[in-house]
Every structure is written in structure tokens, then in C-alpha cells.
Amino acid sequence: DTGVSQNPRHKITKRGQNVTFRCDPISEHNRLYWYRQTLGQGPEFLTYFQNEAQLEKSRLLSDRFSAERPKGSFSTLEIQRTEQGDSAMYLCASSPLDYREAFFGQGTRLTVV
Amino acid sequence: AQSVAQPEDQVNVAEGNPLTVKCTYSVSGNPYLFWYVQYPNRGLQFLLKYITGDNLVKGSYGFEAEFNKSQTSFHLKKPSALVSDSALYFCAVRDGDQAGTALIFGKGTTLSVSS
Image 1: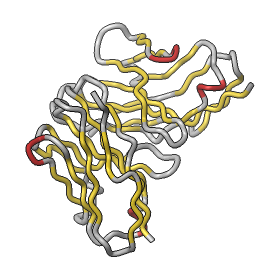
Image 2 (image 1 turned 60 degrees about the vertical axis):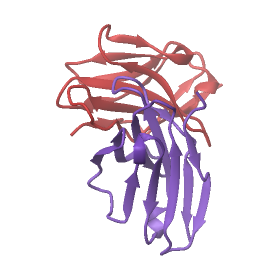
Image 3 (image 1 turned 45 degrees about the vertical axis):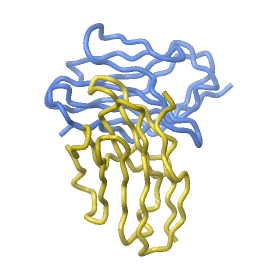
């Protein structure tokens, strides 16, 4: 059990560019979550996968955001045409079952300049 | 849809005194409730959870929480605070009756323990 791994840890991009983040969950955890967190705030839910199926997506999530989880293993989160408001920490978490706690990665800090 | 409210942005307590961090929730079905802690520049760490059973649950670092169904609350408590408990605390809820629902977090409460 090596924990949830997120790459890259930091990303600085120019406004209008596309970025992609990767999350490797704990092996055999079939639930995977993406959250966004700004300074001093709680994690804001973005989307949720059970295996390869994307079961829920926040209504607040712009169409510029897309996530995939091919084969139910790692997941990617892509942001197209980044805006300064997208600057935040993007967190990934995984859990084996609904009644088990979710384990979080260290996050990817995105800065849009 | 489920939601969580943490009514206090900050809680201040002196070392050695008891602490309480408040959380109320809203969910259609049976709640699965969690508390997490976040230290500066660190990831979220799980503290404890309530799924079913005894309303008083015990977790890491001497923390405990009491589930109150009638008040839809899940307050985090510790009998004697330590300076090292100073951190950001998050309450989270999932609807246990609906498979495949997301884990939703509150906005967090900053706990400051003074020596």
C-alpha cells in the first residue's frame, strides 16, 4: 500500500492552456474522487468514479473540466482553456467501499498566470 | 443531495481544556459521517467515522465524536486539547442508502490551541 499518488505536485500554466493531472489510487480501491480546494476552504467535490464508471459530476463543474478512469485504475483530470479562477489545489482520493474512509493524495497545486 | 455545515470558522481553546468542533449534516438516507484533519502543507488525514452502532465513536489522537440523529449533528470532541492539535478540521457526509454517491465536505473549522 503506497498511498494515493498524484502527479505533478505543482503546475504553473498560462491562461488559455490545457493541463492534465494524474491520480494513481491505492490498488484495489474501486472508488475514486476528485476535489478542488482553495486556501482555507473545504474540498469541493468535482467528480466520482466507481471502477471505470463516472457516477457523479458536480453541477458546478465547467464543461472545460473532464475526467477519465480507463480500466478502473488510474484517473486523469483535464482542464481546457485554463482561467485564473482555476488556480487551486486539486485533490484525489480513493476508497475500497462506501462505508470506508477515503484516502487522499498530496494534491496537485495549479497556478494559472 | 447531501450537505454539511460547520458553523464556526475558528475555535480557540487553551491547552488542557476540552474542545468541541461542531458539524451538522443533511442527507436523505442514513448518514455515513467522517472527520478529517489537515495540517499546513499536508494532505487530509482521516480521524474517525460513524457508520452504524454506538453513537459515540473514538478515533485517532484521542479524538471522539458523538452522532445525534435527532439534531443531525456529529460534533468532534477531545477531553484535553494539545497545542499540536492546532489544524484545520473537516466534517464530511455520504448518503449510506444510495450507492455511488459522493463524499461531501464542510468548509472547515480552524482549531487553535494556545499554550
